[in-house]
Length: 477
Image (tube, rainbow, N blue to C red; front, side):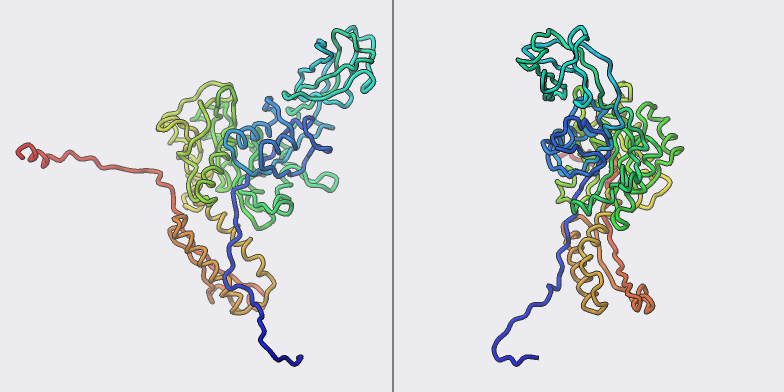
């Protein structure tokens, strides 16, 4: 050691480690009008993190045709609920999910012909004269662009052969979102690359965001899709956990849908079942889409801690409807019947339209509060995800007393803070000799026991009302 003479300062690691924040981030799988994407390469089977409506539209385009299911979510989450961020995954591949449209006539007005076919593709478009005898050339006779409504606009060039044509015959290919099926959402490995729900594992490595909700509106009512959604949600990157928001078929009565739920195994603590659909004005949403907005806005109002139930929180809706658009006005008795079967619904009773229901899909077969109550299940996931992120930095450190104390001391301070905030009724972390045998310690395995009690929702409030004749004495002063 070198000879030293003087006053010196060295630093040691901080004894208390602040927790790493985990917020609500929905990951949504669906279809997008990517012919309207403003990116050089439109995203297909690629997770994209977006923080605003403008960013989402720039990446995926937007269409009022909500067969493009990501357009529905973009409108609901960013425009209606003003929430962010979200991770969106488009599985529609324009090289596969397309169909041909036959020649149609479109009038030319001020040198422009608007092709009012949603999803019309620029590639392989054929533009002909009004009588179909002459085929015009791109860039020589006309140019192509999209308008704000997603329509393809043919602009005739003043010196081109089509300049004086009063109408055009246009044919070609258009995106076909109806060609996307459950297998495309489920995905797998294609040419060595993950597709569909397999991409859920890429969200954290790409964006450092932990998925909290998994959605596939328009497809989650398919049992095969829902099964993969809940399986993937419970094992993200082998460490993180999330909740799947699944829709039940809205073409059934509220009494029949209960049997359908059980017969098709929508019975996991990893899923929140929703029924039916909801409307806002002339737009119809899957209830799972709007429930994501309710959950995220509720979390945001409570410090991004998911201890408050989304039940009895406002939906952005003016009606609940079945698949064919028939209005469905459930009363509290009918709504609580669905709630008692593990289904979240929409109720218009006191205070306008509300999300209604506290139970996961596991209820009533499972009554353990950590698996049956939505806010308790989400809190347990949130605590687990936060512990993983906060203490990953200690992995591979030497197993010694200082390591144990650093984890227990900082985690207990954090849990005590949650108790003080009202997010937990109580919580603590212990390092117990009974759970850490020498064989494990020698092998580099240490185990901490975390106890936490999130508050359950007040699902029933009872008043005992009694007529008390003793107050008659007030008549006599």
